[in-house]
Length: 116
Image (cartoon, rainbow, N blue to C red; front, side):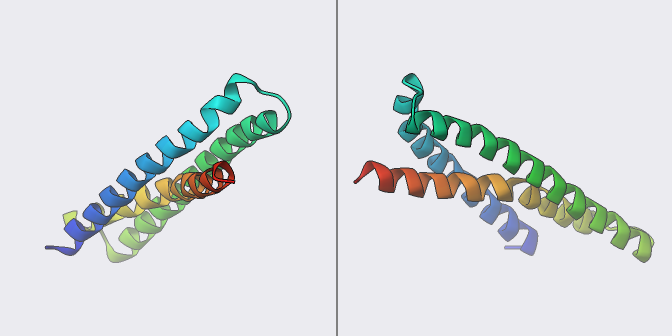
């Protein structure tokens, strides 16, 4: 298996795990959203803040990854198709990383809270 194939496979696995974590998080938060008061209201506000923060951080990190590739390509005098492919995986990983970390942390936190 090529290096690119391994990276894409790993990214797909992490994305699938994020889907599971998102489902757990949604299931844990939904009952509280039906009655948004007190702790539930704080959780709803936190939910919105985390989404905005993760989106902004992901966009920033993706732009840095793409900029680093463009800069390196300019210094090299161009890029091969393989280098572009790896750079696109770099950008995707950079963009998805903040949201993936946040949803994973939320799934863990909310399942611990629910089991108390």
